Picture 1: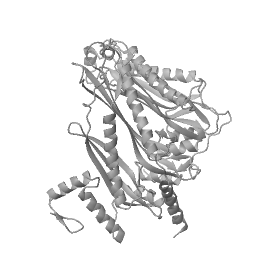
Picture 2 (picture 1 turned 90 degrees about the vertical axis):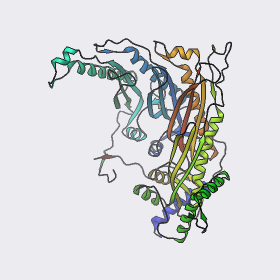
Picture 3 (picture 1 turned 60 degrees about the horizontal axis):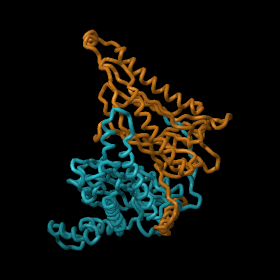
Picture 4 (picture 1 turned 180 degrees about the vertical axis):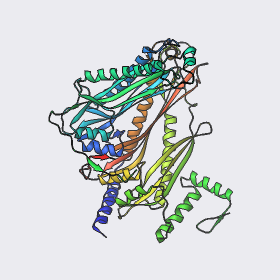
Length: 272
Length: 305
C-alpha cells in the first residue's frame, strides 16, 4: 500500500471512528447555518465562527395608488411598501443576530414572493448566517449593529483577504409606472427603427432613483464604496407597465489604511 | 413469475402481498430485499458489476480520494396521508369569538406525521445501505411530492459508500452533500452524521382585522399572517435543532428551506377561512473528528479565465 493511500484510509477510518463513538441525545449546543460546505469552511478559515441561522419575515399588504394611463411616474406608495417591508424583515433578522451576540451576518438572502391568496399581499424574507469573530474584536458597524452582507462565504473571505470589512447591506427601491404610448405616437413610428424616448426616460429615471437611494444608505454608514451590487427589475403581480427597480449591495470600508491586495494567480481550470 | 435469490417462485400478487406485510413489519419490501441481497453477494464474491451509483465522475474521484468507495444506489420511500381537518383553528363561533385577534395554533399532529414520514423514508434508505454493508449514504436527494388529495410522498435517493478501513459506525450516516462537498468536509476534519429535518405546521383563523388589512388602500403589514409564518418557521427551527441533537450532531448545514401557505374553509365559523403554513428546513448534521478541525491548506486566491 502506498503512503498516500494509507493516509486516505486512515482519514476515512478516523471519521468512522468518530461516528462510532457518537452519543446521540446528548444535551448541548447545536447551531444551524445556511452556508454551503465551501462557505462554511472558508468562513472558519477567515477567523469567524458561525453562530446560527437568523431570519426575519414580514407579510405585507401593498396599498393602492392611482396611476395615469399615459404618464411616466414613480408609484411612491408602492416604493415605500417594498422598502418598508424589506426593512422590517431585515431589522428582525438583525435583532435575532443581536440576541446571539453576533458580530455580523453573512450570506444574506432577501426574497419577495407575492402570494396567490390575498390581494396585493407579499411575503418578505431575510435569511442569513450570524457569525462571530474568533479574535474577540468587535466587527460591528458605526451604528453599533452587526454588519450584514449579501456576499457569499467565498466573496466574504476574499473581501477580508483584500483588507476590507463589510459594514451593511444597502438598498434602494423605486416602483415606476411606465406610460402607455398614445395611438398617435404608435402610428407615427410605425415601421421605423427609432428610439422611444418616453420609454428610455422612464426606465432610466427609475434605475437612477433606485441607485441614488442605495448610495445614500452607504453614505450614512460612512462606507468607502459598495460591492456586489445587483440591479434587478421585477414586475411582481403588477402587470407589464409597473416595474420595481431594486438595487442592493454591500457597503465596505478598508480595515486599515495600509492594506495590501494579494496578487491573484492565473489558473486554467479543467473543471466546468 | 419471479424467482427470488433463494430459488422460490412468486406471482406478482404474492410479491405485492408479501411486500406489504414486510413493510408493516418494519422491513424493506421484497424486491428491495432481493436487489440488496444479490448485490451484496456479488460484492462479497468480488464479481464485476458489484456496485451501482448515481455519482458523477468527479464525485466518484472525490470520494475515492478520502478513502471511501461506493457500494450501491439506495432508496427509501414512504407515502403518508397528511391532513389538517382533524384540528380546528382554535376559534369558536358565537359571541366575542370573531372580534378578538385570532391566535396562531400549532398543529402538532400534522407536524409529527410529516416528521415521521420523512424519518421512515430515510430509515428505509439507511436499511438498504446497511444491507449492502455501507457505512453511509452521500448525495441524498430528498423529494416531497403531493399525491392524490392529502397524500404526501417522501423519497430519499442516494449512493451508499463504505470506508476502506475496518472501523464501522454504529449506524450508517446519511447526508445530502455532493461527493465533492463530502470529500472537502472529511479532509477538513468533519464528518456528516445524519440528514435532519425541521417542520413547523400552524393554522390561524382569518379574523376581521386580517380581512380589513387585506382590502385596505394603505400600505401595511399583515400582522396575523406575519405571525403565522413566523411561528411556523420558529417551530421548524426548534424541530431542526431537536433532530440534530437526537443524532448527536454539532452543526447543521442547511440545504433547503421551503414554506407552503394554504387556505381552507374554517371548520368552526361559517363562511370563515383559515390560513395554514408549513415550514420545512432540510440539511445535514456534521461533527468534527479532529480536535482542531480546519482547512488542511489555506485557500488559494485565483483568477478564472
